[in-house]
Length: 378
Image 1 (cartoon, one colour):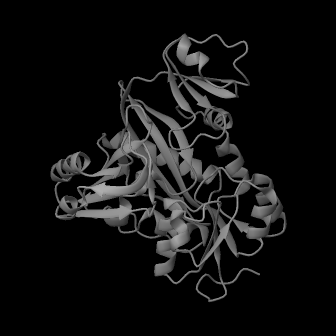
Image 2 (image 1 turned 120 degrees about the vertical axis):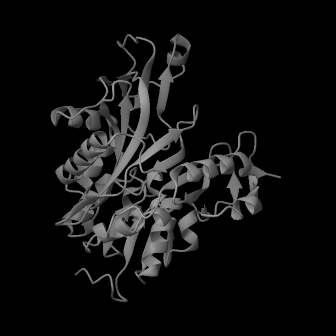
């Protein structure tokens, strides 16, 4: 029997205890909804706030199965979890969102790309390969590991034979290079009977780490492109019957064409700005979706810019946030630190959201924060 989320006997289980899990727990705490988190790291971000923390691997069959049996509803903050355990839990009647079938497709980038093609949705030209054997690369191209990629890992731009030789021999997707004008993201949210989209945003990426460094909302693209992106995101989340969130990343090429890059069925880095910038944050909307509660308003309250705080190159060890005092003096800047004790190059350590009545002013403040706030070690 699944208890009401607003009863003291209810518990929401979360596979993964990183910063996304932490911020989901924070929203659940506001509603007095009990959370349990499974993660291998005793010092993970969510361990500090979850009602119950279980140390263990979310990739291990027995661990996930045992954990899932102790909660009322199970969700994720990372998609790379043990699907066989989720299949078994679903057979036993456990409520799981996103559903294991959708996760199985999304975990594999080859299946993702085939899915877009089957739906006749726009994506960059690609080919799927089981190994490097027999593939004749045409440089440059984009190489994506079929499985296991996350936060920019498992993705490489292959410029030459030397780049190609350094890649592992695993199943992969080869994508044609896209002449990218900009990148945007739309996060769709769904419960059993409603679907809506959070405010779209434009994204700026680190040139080598493949990490989002800055997010701007409203997205800096024409209205017809935004409407097309929202239509596609809505179609995808409905097609997968996902309850909760589906973040959809898009390229806009030099000809103004919209192309799906990839999707994530969970809270997403591109949606952090909604905590201060939207009437309902992505975390509140995910909670509402997975618990089948009425969805909140997605209205953007003010122009917003989100700046990621990532570990500075050349620094590893106990973290020190250089420039924090100056950032705290900037009007409209809200700081979120993830509670990670150790910094290392390009590790996501936190973010700052800037809200302002004028987007240009918010962007100027974001650039200033990028310059002065550094996650280093002493």
